[in-house]
Length: 290
Ligand SMILES: NC(=O)c1ccc[n+]([C@@H]2O[C@H](COP(=O)([O-])OP(=O)(O)OC[C@H]3O[C@@H](n4cnc5c(N)ncnc54)[C@H](OP(=O)(O)O)[C@@H]3O)[C@@H](O)[C@H]2O)c1
Image (tube, rainbow, N blue to C red; front, side, top):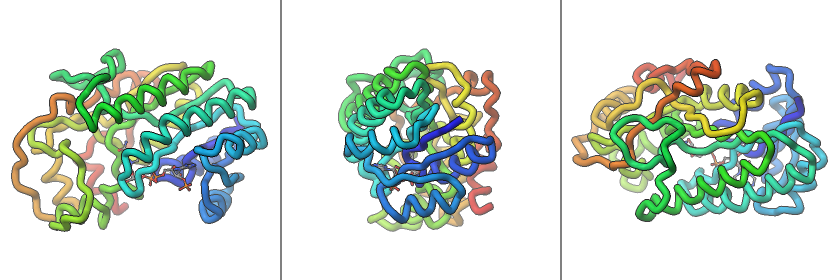
């Protein structure tokens, strides 16, 4: 299959490109920069320089690649800029879907989120509605995800990968990353919002498992699929394990719970044959150096 990857140089994309090549696909990766396109080429794929916020440039890039499928791994989170990623979810997805239509593409796989569900007391499956109307700043994020998913669903087959909190190489959770700095007392380091509160429940996924899911999703039917590990966990369980893996002191208790922080179930993804290599953050956090 000819596959165009938007976001080929990101934390997921850079692992995804070689996996797609290994699976026998012809891959074109998109980056805004020359350095990004060179990086993709060094991995053995084709590359094209384009900005997802530039409709004409993106259209030309997609048309030239003539893909059978588009994978959207676009975020703009290097500076933890929620507004920039929100814009990318809305405008970038619009431009990508329009370009895909023009290029007669009938399959798209997009990166979405697994913590946008309405509040509840057990891990959410994909039938739980989105938490539309949530208070800000969460409300804008959930609305951005709704737009992302609904825009993608204009393509005949649209698989919406609702990723848990990503950890592993290239993420905030890697050794020496932003979370490690925050745990070390760096007040400038951006931390995680409120999911670390003692009773809040989070679902994690290792970036390598996230990338593997995107390859598998090229043959899945339309709809949302949670891509999370097997063990949704409260902050008081996972945070000390993470701190130990990063060689940092465990932080003191943070009282409270976000009612929406309920974790997610991976039953559907597993029923389709996806199995996380890192089935739990318990072993995955410690393996980030590997
Ligand atoms: N579910 C999650 O927990 C989650 C999800 C996503 C990201 N994150 C975190 O966010 C942090 C940064 O993520 P990241 O390393 O993937 O980097 P990022 O800065 O979010 O960029 C991701 C990808 O999007 C591309 N991109 C961004 N804006 C673009 C635009 N306007 N046009 C075309 N391409 C564009 C980037 O390409 P170029 O820069 O090469 O143009 C890159 O390939 C990491 O810690 C990651 O773990 C977490």
